[in-house]
Amino acid sequence: MHSKKYEPPDLRKASSFQTREDALAKKTCQWKSLEIYGKVLTVSNEVFGMNHLTSLHMANNRISHLPSCVGNLRSLEFLDLSNNVLEDLPKEIGDLLNLRELHLRHNQLRELPFEVGRLFQLSKLSIEGNPFNQEYPSAHPSDPQPILLYLLDNLQVAPQPPPRQWTRVHSLTETGFTGSGERFSVMSYNVLSDKYATRQLYGYCPSWSLIWSFRRDLIFKELSQTNADIISLQEVETVEFQNFFQPKLTVLGYDHIFSVKSRAKTMPESEARHVDGCAIFFKRNRFRMIHRYTMEFNQMAAQHSKGAPDMLNRVMTKDNIGIAALLEVKGLSGTLRSTPSPPDILVANVHITWDPEFRDVKLIQTFMMMRELETIVHEAIQERQRNPALGVREIPLVLCGDLNSLPKSGVVEYLDKGEVPTNHSDFLNKFYDGYLARLIGESKQTEKTSSGGGKAAPSGSSLSSAEKITHSFNLSRVYDKDFELPFTNMTHDFTGVIDYIFHTTGFLQARHLLGPPDPQWLEDNRIVGFPHPHFPSDHIPLVAEFELCIKTNSSASGAGGRPSSRNRQS
Image (cartoon, rainbow, N blue to C red; front, side, top):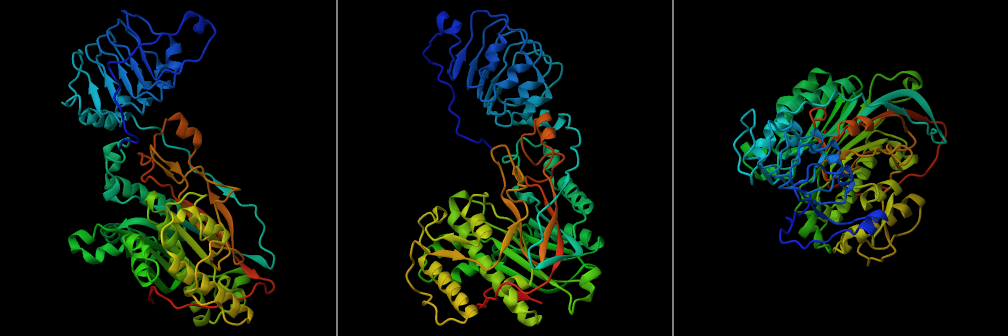
């Protein structure tokens, strides 16, 4: 729960003083520690503007009042107010979120403000010797959690946030395509598996709002109110899919696919039912499922390990999965009604490994996923008798997922630009040369086959640092630089964008996007992070509305196929 290692202040500290001349000259003080002593009655507000302080010693004085501006000391880790005459504490003391020690012994406190419960990183809280009006849960000073939990659970909940606002996308439809008027919406949402929602990780969240029965009702309320035509969920436990999401969303008119992480296969059923996976729900009056697919990255790593030992050492140890559903659009209206056959859409949902020390694995998992999606589309073009003139773009792709990767990562660069160099720093100098060389060889073979050229270089050829790993999809990120969310995941020690919705251009055009939580509400209510009583996951759902487009003329060339290594179920 602690975001960084805490070093208690050295009580055998050496003292230094600011001279009168320095004070008159308003020289800035950068002391990390400050001690105030001498039977002081009142502390100047200027002290509470020294937001660089990490340690503040004010014990053994005659201080009776602590101003609200104490909340400005956001870097403070140690605060000693013992042996004073404090009768109350300002609620702003709850803003000292980095505080590790708070000493309040032998004052005149009648109660602790509930906001003290927000100090989730406290490792020491001493409150003995105060004439409290009530009994607080018994706790040793070195284990303040019972008191903190009591205070936090009874803290008044912030008012309901304003609804997230929809934003219209003003980008133009691609040349050679025109809008059909047929629209559908897509949600991507990591719902935070119950087994990960612990107080050790989310100590700033009241315990009653971490309970799964509370969070799942909020999640379902969000799903039903958003009413998206397609819902992609990550971190769905098998038992909760079976007992909650599947029956609840079936009643609302959704069909579904679901796959669990690979480790479940090796576990007893009693344990496997709590392993999480990915789910796609789609409205049965809008779509008909043609095929479903599961991509198990550890199994795929084993198949591609020749000449790439880190496929076994690193990639195979992670059991993340991706799933996909090939859907036929139903209930068409307008210009699409007159088309020879209903259009198809491929919807993919993925949860990439989380560990920042495995950025190379994130990249490899993404490569494997995109290769499989290309194969799926090529097979579907043949099976569905589509015109291959546009290659993989002939069947639109919507890719949702928690990629656990920032916008400037190699994963997002690869998806955004369609390529990433083999010497990218995210490979961490790990050994994947054999696999990467084969990917490059396949891409060259595809290019030559589609252009009528001769043979490509052998797939086992040596790897050059100038080479690039590519994919054939022309992807667009719906929350791009023109409308980038400030975060999709928000906790006390991380706030950033790691969830995405991508789509192929041409046949799909984003029209509306759901905006972020209200920033003013977050600031006014001093929100530390999610989950929160109003936000049931540490992620927020992404929602986009798309318009299906139709070709007005032919453009782009096709691309060849490649053998498949994923599991397809009709």
